Image 1 (spheres, rainbow, N blue to C red):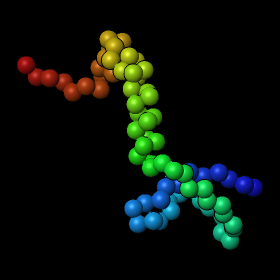
Image 2 (cartoon, rainbow, N blue to C red):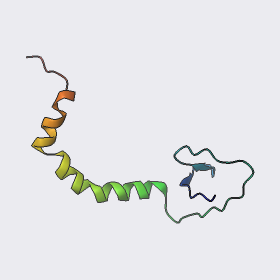
Image 3 (cartoon, one colour):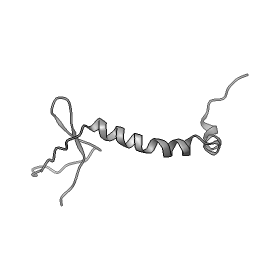
Image 4 (cartoon, one colour):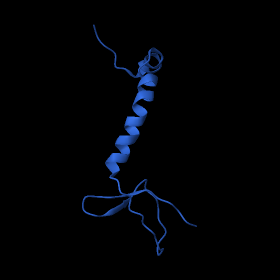
Length: 75
């Protein structure tokens, strides 16, 4: 069975499979190297979601929902 896995090439040129997959032994693999750094993908995703998440998270309803996790303040 074929699998598609996400990987990055680190600063030393070592290929690292992400998300802890247990790979079968003695198999062939095809690697496609993309023309983008891993940081740019994460940054793009963060920038694209920032506006929507800020509207969702920065609300009175969210503050109330998570209030039980805030430390008690002593007066």
